[in-house]
Length: 222
Image (cartoon, rainbow, N blue to C red; front, top):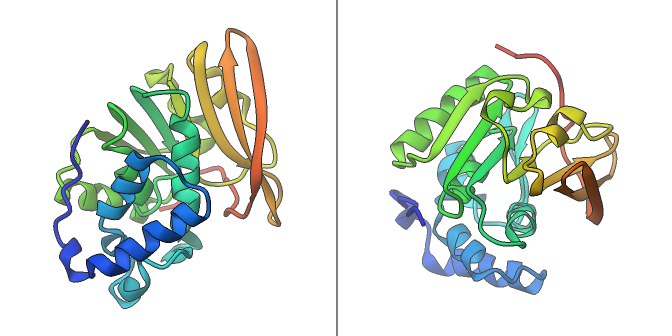
């Protein structure tokens, strides 16, 4: 397991972070590994300094360009669901955003591949992850709906924006032997968080809960 460098996390009290972990447990998060990573990942570094005092609240926060940093419960829920069947080596993240979810995945999997379509967010996340000495994450400026086909197959794919329908391209980039895709699907209202598991050419679909994400859009924004 890789270790997250928690440089700078001391500016927020341990008690504040522990309160967040208690709340996540109360909401049903059970994975001790996931909880420990969220406790030790410096979420305040992934938001504007003016919002850093709210970083360990269980709420989504704006990161600019019409995008948000997902609430910690959703980050924990998606991470726990993705890893529920056992350790994963190669995980693709669609929507790097601030880089926070990337940082959470980093200690839990061997390699994270992450794509982001908004250039300033991509560049900011790349710089921050480098500052945190996270070395097993590879980032790319790209249209997320297409995934990263030259790097497939992936043991897991996590999508942090909502398409109207599951992109066929992402299904085909899953490992045929139990590859797992977690993705919110639906319109701009409430969406359905789905877990798709692939065995050969068969795809098992499981609905986890209702969620609300920004839409998955095409094209690179500079």
